[in-house]
Image (cartoon, rainbow, N blue to C red):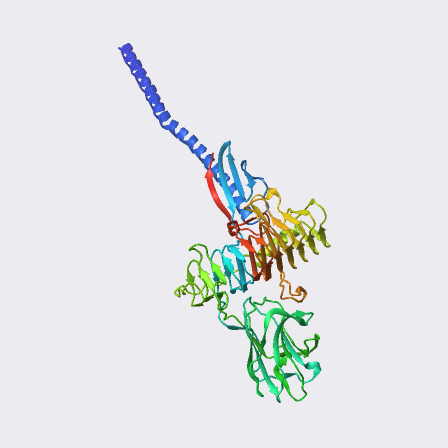
Length: 597
């Protein structure tokens, strides 16, 4: 019995053990089945995380490179970002105005790669064959041709049979307004006599205008004593060491209105409307033809400190002898209020605008013009079409370069060092390379020399290129353009040529000169082009551009412009968005941003 019980208990224990083992086996299988996917998922999650971190690092490398390029910060061809034991290696390859940025993120040997292509935008652009400020454009001879469009904030005057193959647009100036005045208190505390004795035969007042707008009229608070005879000629002249120059600016003269024995505001209205340069000292001279101790003129005045950027003097204009009055006269300078106009005065076909049926003519007044396209104007005469009057008035348009652009080029030139003294590149055939460089002095390129411009140049004096002198950009400039800046006058003449071998690359020639509005100019323009040809664009923001002879340019910009002879301006559309190797440029444009690995 006991044996049977033990046998039964042993068999029950074995069964229980077997059941437990089987249960544990099943449980382990279940656990393994549940854990194994989790392990795989965990591993996959780790790989995914590393991949994402690698991608983020690659993005960081690209973004860091773009940030530095956009903000002109230092960056090499190869850069590495380190994050713990992980990294992103960035490589930058430059091809002309384009950069390809490749960034490879690396996290535990898991790599992601991003490629980015960026291109520089245009920081400046010449959008017209000719463009001027308020000084306007004067086409003085027959056969002057502008192959392109023209935009001026002044007037387009044609004095022959001239051609503009694109559109011609002349904007009105802003409304008439007082730019400068000295009129307080209402009753003058002092006065200035002139025309009474030989030492004070004439009177002059200096001033500066605040904006590049056409001079409309000048007013004087003046009266007469007795009955002075003779005439008063109103002259606008440049400053000469703190006194009026003896040379009239090429801006016309005026005569005064009626003067009585009581103070009143009397107008002096000029026959033309010169566009004066801001922050430049000019003098208004009342040049009287005789003197009489009892019959003379009196101008109201106050203390010399009353008008901060000018003073009054008396003397003799013809001899340049002047004496300080220690006073400021009562005067007012009016600018603006001048309507834009296009064409010749009083006769038909002085100017032809457009080609075929394309090319608009647009201004407040149009005269003596054959318009191939539309003619938009308020008034017109001697034209081939009647005015379409519902188009409004063309707006003022700024010139393509700013003072900040020019300062940027000067900085780029200065980075290459300074050379003191005049630089003569003349003589027989040969090549001279220079740039970037600041030249403290004048630059002359002539003879048969070739001047290779390898960087921005800044010349503090004048630039003269004549003879068979040649200036060009090196072949490695590819699509990039370059700039030469002169503080003085620029003269391009003879058989000289400038430019580039690449049709999308240009040599920009920029003058800071205010000529002919400064005394040292002797009537010369800031930029004079006579015979020079090539892929060049000239710019005189503050002065006049004179184009004579048989010159050929890609574009020209100036405060004013004079075109004489059989000149041709062949506008190149590439000038609408040039790329510069140094100096100003637009922001970087993103052409492509993609993951490649």
